[in-house]
Image 1: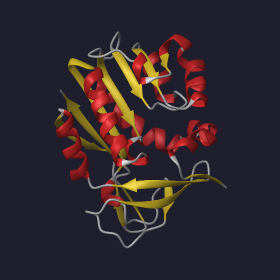
Image 2: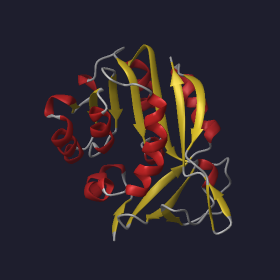
Image 3: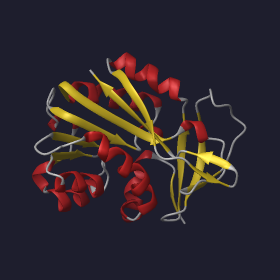
Image 4: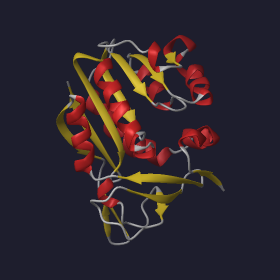
Length: 223
């Protein structure tokens, strides 16, 4: 079984990420309708991985760009949306430019300082009327040992405590180390970076083994 226990190992599971249909159905089907009519809109997928979402947005008529830190991911994304539409470094990304910035399933796998850096970057890259959608696994279900998407090695840590825990993804059968932080912690980071919280959206609820579960949270933010 493949394992992703460091930020620099995600390229090892590029093919598995492309095949996570349950995740895409839950997360992307919640996110995309939030964007409305995106024809001609300038969208940045920040940390977009193999470009699955970027391609879907391109097909809906958006002017889509993607940034990722992993060359293998950028290569996969370039195949889908074109080499001219991918950024290899932060410095290549224009400031005050994008109508929408999407950052999916990134902040929950990077260190705290990197979370702050990413949120600051997103603030600087949005145009004055732009909207950011930042989403990841719902921290409220950190102590549930199984969802439709994964098995979790539950710790004895409290919701209010930042901590690490391991997951096994059902689709792809790989292990990851995820970083739990309470929703309120992220809200403080957004505020510090100058982003205003507009809404918190959760993916649809379902019941598994007696637990009511909403897999993901998506924060809607503006300057």
